[in-house]
Figure 1 (cartoon, rainbow, N blue to C red):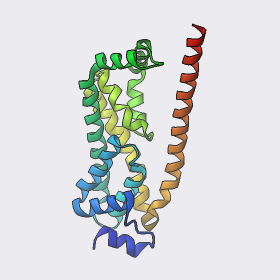
Figure 2 (figure 1 turned 60 degrees about the vertical axis):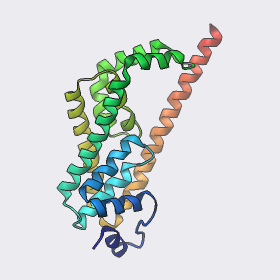
Figure 3 (figure 1 turned 135 degrees about the vertical axis):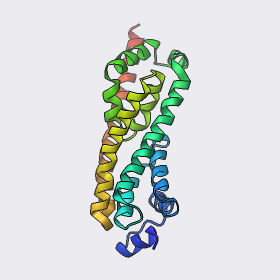
Figure 4 (figure 1 turned 90 degrees about the vertical axis):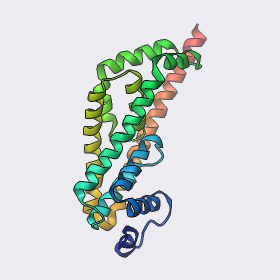
Length: 217
């Protein structure tokens, strides 16, 4: 019996289209590799919310598609793989190109990059670890870690630890909730909206301050 069939039997809300339907089909066809691949893509396409994929992986484990331990390991491997790819993209991109972009972008200054580097040298470890638990931010933090050439071993361990904690919360929730796996999503959605709102507020304040500095100058 396929995962989609199990969902249809367990609940009238079986996801047969959209992201949830695609994820179910992927895990049906590829098993644990499909779960890892779906979570990995969250790093490259933030609109793909792992908060939907992870509970589905937990539900799949509850239906015997694969084991709970397998779901936890596969989703964490997927998260770490995606993060490592972005880390090395940041490392290849390099500081010189980042400085050029800061120099050429309106409202940005090279001094902003220097302050960011100073902050990252002090708090980079915490940012990488806790960043894995914050929607959108987890897709971005790996790039500055690569640009700043954070020690790869430390980056790998912190990313794996943060991902394992975050993934376990949602996978186990999906495993325990069974047919009600999608009850997790509204809470995760509210958290994501709060993060987006905070980011927009910070950007708005930054633009306001920088424009005021220009007028004063």
